Amino acid sequence: MHDLETPQRAVPRLEELGADLLVTTRRQRLLTLARPFIGLFCYAVAAYFNLWWLYPFLVFLIFVAVVTVTHDVVHRSLGLSQHQTEYALFFMGMVLMESGHAYRTTHVQHHKYFPSEEDQDPEGYPAHLSLLGALFYGPVFLYRLWWWAFQRNQQRFGQRMWLILEALVPFVVVIVGLLLWNTLPAVLLYAFFALVGSWVYPLLTVYLPHKDYGETPLTQTHTLRGRIIPLLFLELTYHLEHHLYPQVPSHNLAELARRLDPFFREAGVQYWYVI
Image (tube, rainbow, N blue to C red; front, side):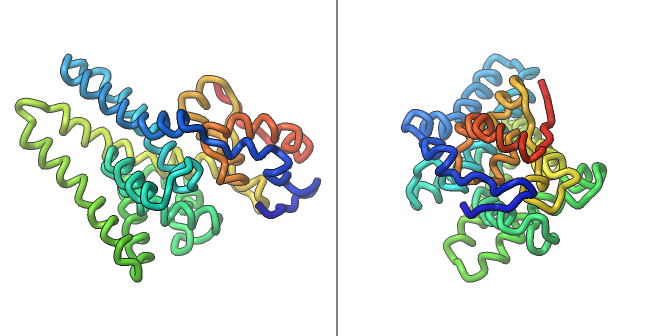
């Protein structure tokens, strides 16, 4: 990472903070990749025992697991090969009927160009909106990202094939859910929760983390500190730390934040405190 100038001094290089922050053990890799499917298994168990009141909570946990692992896969921080990365993007996105390949295209762009206009950084666009604007943008957010990624990959036939395949997944799941409605309504309910749940992406993953962003790398996004919420969101609340060092896997973000605390205090970074 190159030095980023601040009024105090340059942001520490990752080598100064510790190369161990880049380490992903085999156990951590397997756990991160398995979490979404463990969540699906728990949902299936709840469906078998007709524990319908657990559905929203379990889908929320699946969302967190998928966002976390896809984030790490996009930034190549889990130690996967190129071939494994392509399949991981597909299968992790498939869990929530989303496009992992579209997310990779737009998220890498977001890290390069935020804050920019929608045509250059479509993922970061909700940060320019109001609170209500970010809420109302939810239903079209993923579709606009997919279309931007599809156009962006005009010369990459393989990537476009992944994108088309991923775009078909929601239709297949909904059709299967409709066919099974009388015997297994949990399938269509899962599709409903997943599709509607994705509407909060602009608010939770873009607007709030970047709200009132400034001009410097230390003010373009925020960091949330606490015990329960960061743990519940699998450390994704350390958004500032992630933007400064995107190559650090999510399971090391809490430790990265701890090591950055002296620098943040000197630089006057303000924390958002949660439970």
